[in-house]
Amino acid sequence: MSGFMASPLWFATRATGIVAFLLLTLVLALGVLSTERGFAGPRWPRFATQALHRNTALLALGLLAVHVATTIVDGYVDMGWATAIVPFSSSYEHSVSRSARLPPTWSWS
Image (cartoon, rainbow, N blue to C red; front, side, top):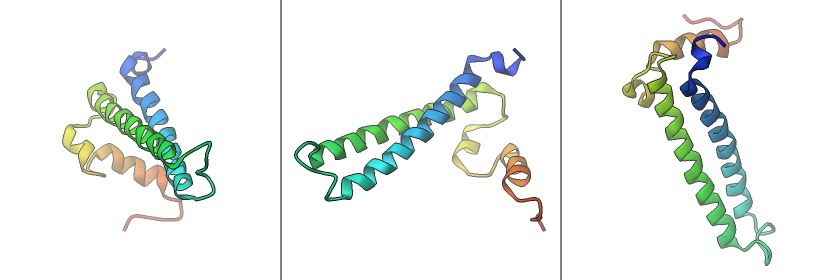
């Protein structure tokens, strides 16, 4: 393995990011389903779906906090705590947003 991939923090950052993303997707789906009258019934009472929604959201936010902390501590990307709080304030984020997120026909003027 190369140098940056041998770090356990590198793997922890990616793993917590992916799992947090999947859990936040599940939280969104549970939130939508818990508001539907047809979903709640005798087998799944409303308090159970809301508790599952709330606890899944707490777990996802905890993993998101670990993801941010491991990203800052890892050093693969030069980020500080202020950069993690203020969106698009990192030079790394700007280079990624300009090259990867915009279609090739768009340009920065």
